[in-house]
Length: 302
Ligand code: MLT
Ligand code: MN
Ligand code: ZN
Image (cartoon, rainbow, N blue to C red):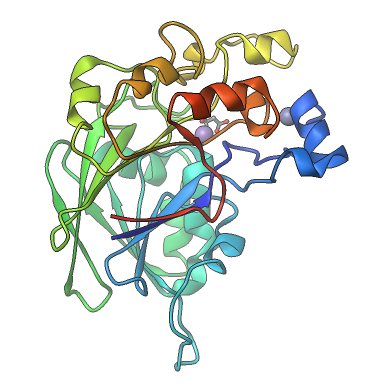
């Protein structure tokens, strides 16, 4: 299975259009210190040609241009066979409506995620006006085969698992399963990847469930719990926004460091996070702990 990080920034991207925090400022004024990043999304493929998106970001148009594959011979062709959504947050789902020219869109989501897209963000009804939009319901804790557009099995399966989070702030319902991570497995190679772009807390069972994966893509939104409060741009802590901070004695870095997973990579990194700066002490601490700060275009074969 090939996994490509299409986007590694949190909502707003990096630098964020209206942000002049020290990190966004550095990215603009001293661009050698930090690479720009698009909003969080990944793509997985069993054959390196046909791709399934893990979340559909508002930057999907630009991101799809980076996917490898053969030169199409038909007038209309896109490399995306299907889209799997971990949750219904806007930065993970606005790309669905942006792919409306695709004519047939095959989505994979839990029932609570589907319901929020149907009733609250109305991304499904809007997309359906343009494209034949099908949703395969993903049961939490069970594997579902990903199928190609011609209905043959891809050999890849998805298993959603629950993560600590509140539903999106615009959601009216709060059914269990509104926010998940995915275990993606390749039947042929036995390779596996855990994709967890948002996670409010780490538990022992969650960490244990990742012990045998080859690649862990994990929530690197905030460096510290009071990051936005200290910058004066929000009164909410990282944890209140359902993002476990990287640093601290009970932060994610210390807990991930103890996990014997070959590749551990932060994604969904907010533009305020100092680990984005390549010369920062925070970046050094992450690398010292054996974790990688993800960047767009990174690719893994498992
Ligand atoms: C989040 O990651 O917490 C959400 O994407 C927030 C947002 O969409 O503003
Ligand atoms: Mn987000
Ligand atoms: Zn910023």
